[in-house]
Structure formats: C-alpha cells, structure tokens
Image 1 (tube, rainbow, N blue to C red):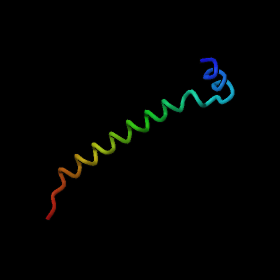
Image 2: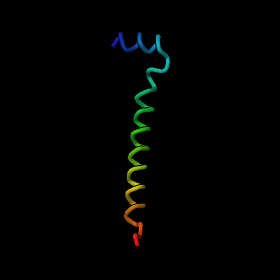
Image 3: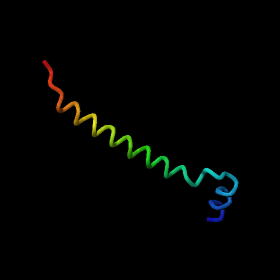
Image 4: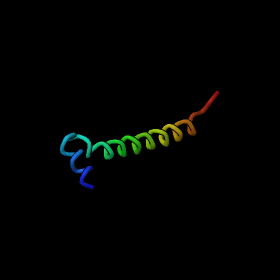
Length: 45
C-alpha cells in the first residue's frame, strides 16, 4: 500500500485515471446501445 501512495504523490494524476477510464467505458456502452437502437428503427427501401 505504501508504494501506491508514494506513486500518487510523485504522479498527481495517477489516482484519477481509473475514474476517467470508467467514464469512457460507460460512454462507449451508451454510444453502442444508442446506435443499435437507431439502426433497429431504420427503414430500408
């Protein structure tokens, strides 16, 4: 555990990257679902 806190002090942005990654994954999932719903409602000639 001490190594984690030491790395966090040396690199200030390292503690927030998992949060940003989680947000990116959730936005990607929302994008995939919304595109799937749009394609489902698309009428082809």
